[in-house]
Image (cartoon, rainbow, N blue to C red; front, side):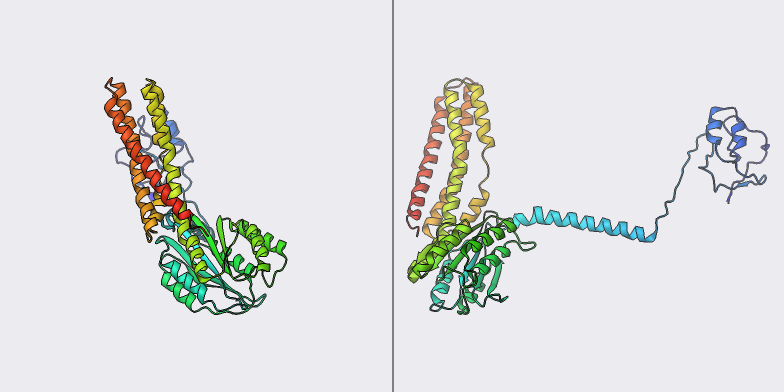
Length: 434
């Protein structure tokens, strides 16, 4: 019940036009007002009038209007059961958390992902001499490994069906070289060669929850003294199992297989295993020196070659397109030149990831030369494009083309010389391939 006092001196039956509600009346009295406003404002359920100091039961009213220039406010209260409120709140919170997790996984973590992820899978099964040669080579190549490369260590060897016939000793990390060195130094031979189980679990290591995929390459480097698995002699099954696991991982994983002192009669099986993993043919080593060179090649040299060649492959196409644009300028086809140069500028995609990886691998003279050359080549590409754009501006302004084209020719000469120098260094490195 709400109290609404009526102004004194106003007869209950007298209402001026447009003032039907000044006394608080609603219902029939409001409809008695001849004005349109009175009809609109007064319509509704009949109130109960209780006297001059009037009060009305508004529990069933749709709203209360006071005065000619009043405003009507309707308030509705939605009653929701407590259990439903809790469900709605929890659903909202879970949705917000899921959205935040998606942003972290899809947007934030990739920015901090390593350029390479490499797992060493080492054979520690019985049947050969100690693992000293393998661990010594492993420790040596770690010194030249990339700074932004995440590495891990896993071994295989044990009883068939046993849970511990493959073990991950060190998880992926960029600052764990000493940890891997110490773990490798403590290895000893045991059990049967459980090669397939080792490969399967190594693949699983790359697809664990919240694991960060490499920006460039995920790879497994296998160092084995055996070409066959003691527990799975069916080579066809082994090939299918590896393919199935790789497909289930949903990742592109490069395999490199190194057979160290593998018996001749087992090499063909190791070859078939490489085929099942879509890997190049295994590399075989007989001496510790050969093992060290082969492991160094796959671990450190191959990424330098790959990234250096990738930089050249990325930077060359825009420069070739610029050459066509400059020829169009010389022919007086300025509109064609403008379109061609604009296309070249748009195709100048970044090489940041490749240069980042190369910068972390400058441990050898060749790697330092290639990184320096790649950085300079990117700068020279910009010089070539800018010089061509200046030549187009000069042509449109009716200025002589000689000076600007001279600058362009100088830029292209320096660019081509840098490409040639890098290719020479790359050829020297390829010659060291095992």
